[in-house]
Length: 170
Image (cartoon, rainbow, N blue to C red; front, side):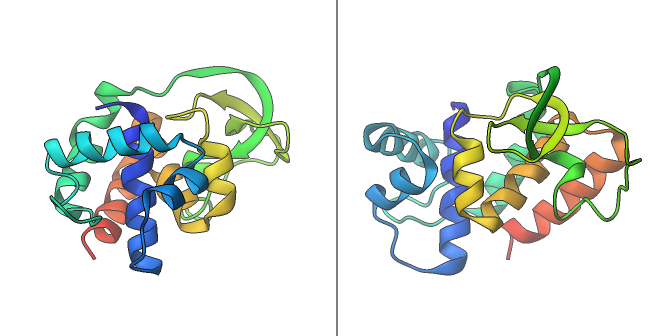
């Protein structure tokens, strides 16, 4: 598995919830990943049982199991300097209202020149995550929950796991 595989899996899940038409070209355009890499990601996702064979449908239980039990060990959250960017983890929906931060606290952000929040830079799973998240609110929420699992405190992780597991198994 590669980090972009997680992005593609979450994008497919997001699109499955919105429509049934999932050509690889659309996945490539909306995720910011090349068409050949989307194709390779789909093959890898099928091989590990996260993508149903012959279909563009995510096996929610398999994806949830990987995200909950393996993600933080395979793709740990890496932090950086203070940066401008898009909020992630507990600072983004759907966790933002549950884990209030002080006005002057630096929250986790994906570095992004178009970002409106100053915070501690965290490396997204894949370089195109901010672009893809900006295009799809549901994908943004999935990715923020994933970051809470990858690097959040115990309470944040527990809540993110509960929300993400419920959404993936619907």
